Length: 348
Image 1: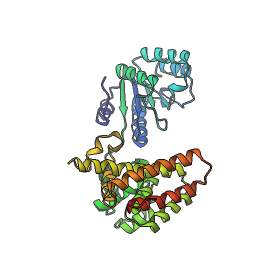
Image 2 (image 1 turned 120 degrees about the horizontal axis):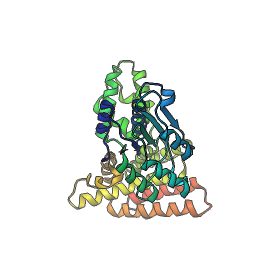
Image 3 (image 1 turned 90 degrees about the horizontal axis):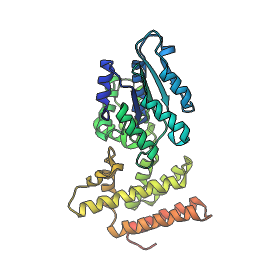
Image 4 (image 1 turned 90 degrees about the vertical axis):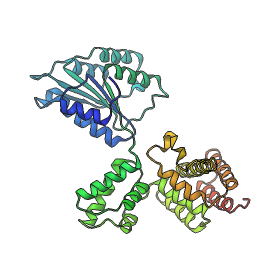
């Protein structure tokens, strides 16, 4: 069977015609969980769920999973066996052989679901996962739950506000997405909080500024914007905020480096006669085009030579953090000073 879309899975649920095997995985864990919960409940049916719905944790052995999958349903035509975060990398060859034998001989009366609510894996980097997904596509179905596009996330927030009887502008919906990031769990939690506070009224920008915590990525973007604008006071204030939140220096540096790489890619696109969003062809920008729009605004305050110098400074700081005993905060504060000078076109 082909790789499923969310729409395909809804058709399976409504028709009640299930494949013998499903693998549900992907970066967007909210969608992974939602799809798996619906599938497991529907495939198990309503008759004797204590017997016909077997759910296993990641620590389950393949023998236990196989015994459950091969057992006949109890006074029903169908049953479901589900395993969360089954990690192939932890299995030896004997277990993998049993695992492959199970997939090759699944009874028609059983739907076996492997779903990944927390575990991340990259089939491009692992033959085990690659072979697993290929076999799953041959024996059943796979569903990859990707991050939603920024436009879809905005629509979702507007819909959630409407359901709660609140008013939310498109601009403020975009601001929430930029502050929180694309993770649906985090976005829906923030919307629930904002709707409760608004209590049927308008969700204003001031509410968002006061109540929505900015992700590390967002805070670092604001820092990069302050640096290219020459606003040293704001840049140091944001750095202090990140340290007060116990963010790891390497994480801060990594996010800051990403902001400057975004600016450099946008500058290169514009100089080639392409739009600022041209780098969205890279996988890391899919659904996060706002990064490129932010980078375009930030890059206006710094020259191409300043960007190159800044990237060199970021690399030097990375080497210092990883290869010296210098205090991390001193390294970061010195980096901020040098980046400010680079933005002004001055040598550090």
